[in-house]
Image (tube, rainbow, N blue to C red; front, side, top):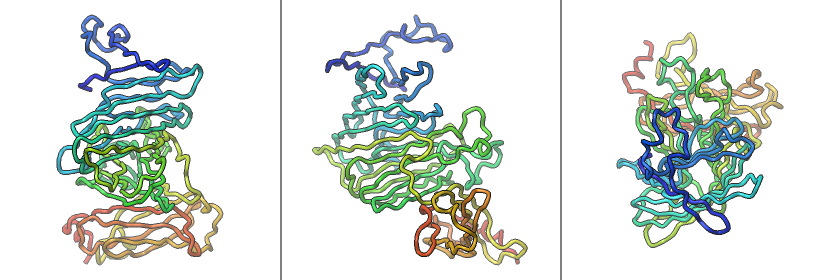
Length: 425
């Protein structure tokens, strides 16, 4: 953090600036001496402690407009931002700063903390209010108004930032001893018409930007569904404990799109995933734009549907074992659990409904997955020598009724030379 922020305490409707003083901090483990710290250095942000535990953070606001919080596990993971501008475009994105925070003194023994913040950047200024409710699922009630200084081409509302290096569906990192490395493993969406969608994250070879059009979305968020330690084997940073963050809009947001930006990375210290709401309306100076939403820092989505949901996505070379491959195909295996799936029997005519934007779908199947009390869908995709990204959709159906949320995916076939190398003559 290269810029300091102003801090104020609000009590009895009066704001008093909190002046920086090096003696307020413990530098014993930093290698620095208090006398060497400039008295005008300033604050870089603040963290939130709760009166039941004065040792462990519950939330922190630090770095541009970044902030994050924990659930009952006490483990930090992904971050949220106050605003995103021109993210995923050909030019560098703009990072607005929170330049001042006003902390309202809470009532004794209260679970609520109200924070007001001023945001500023070359393109926009804004006023924010956060009402933070500390609980096992920590909730932030956010309201803000923006005042653009110039036209903004791509505005990101409620942007979440996370990291995805390798998972069950990604084979790019094969030399790490840990089987999975990620803060989030999927983007979940609840559309305006009520459809639940799960989009597994990827670590792509090239920058990927996808827009999922919607009208008055009911919610979206970068989620960490896999909480099984054995799937990570990391007892240092505990990826299995990382919280999800669900965005629940307040009021009607109108038309726009949930945008997902996936950036290639070879390092788990880089946040390479961004998801946000991009309104369809033009953002121009001379107007103000107000939004409200709630953030749920959680282990499980508090608004989860009654449908079965995706537990895992796996992929690999397709074809029939023991038979020569006359063409290149790629196999997708999607495991669903929950909902009504545990009550079904093998004789139920469950059908995997698959669609693709290009190529052919083959060997489609759906069968019980007894160890998980769920069902497994499987299919092969034959790209037909396509090399551009292909969009896939799948859900399980019984008697014309959806049993599960909709799985969507973007698969980029390998170069033609690689595809042809799998063909056996």
